Image 1 (cartoon, rainbow, N blue to C red):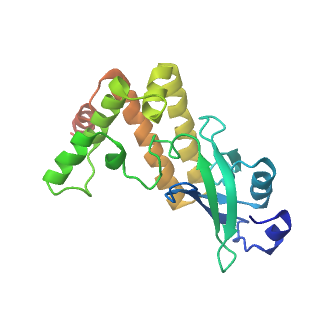
Image 2 (cartoon, rainbow, N blue to C red):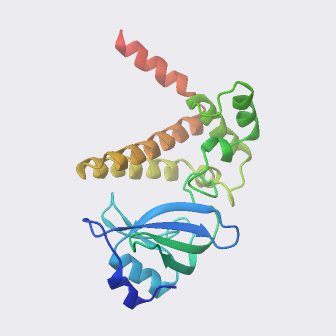
Image 3 (cartoon, rainbow, N blue to C red):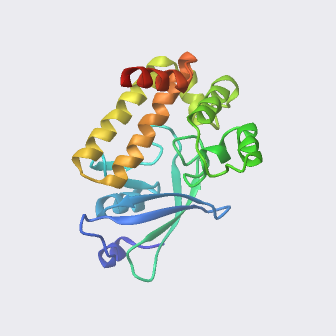
Length: 219
């Protein structure tokens, strides 16, 4: 475990940030990649829970502060160039906001088996379909375990909670755009689209209805 004194020896980028990879201490699975600044790293060492720096919100955020899916930090090591951190954590619940255990799992891998199998039969494992994602959301809404699924938990919380999350994601896109960070814009827009699909799923409206409306406006 690095110490507070070691922080001064780390190499932060021009924005004062350092990449932090979170890895499950029990399975070795890579859970997520985020960023830390000096303050968030020191905070992590102080409280024993992973605290990161949000590049879009421009503020500290403790993983799990709203979802309860904390990362209990067991060890932090630094690479040979001293510019990347590896956190060994005990993950409470899923690491990804989509409900997947890891942010590096595709939605198909963490979605229903039927959609994954169908894609495999068509040889389309790498393709993406809004309709299939929508069907996964419907499945999570109807049968998902709120303890294990972000989607099921949010749906069970009710429409107001879903809409609040959608508004938050729209704000994240705006902040990412103001920061002129293309990667962050793509990431936050994906979140916005995901939660927009969740609203459609809540009301039982297929995404094709939106595509049809866009086609109508084009004429």
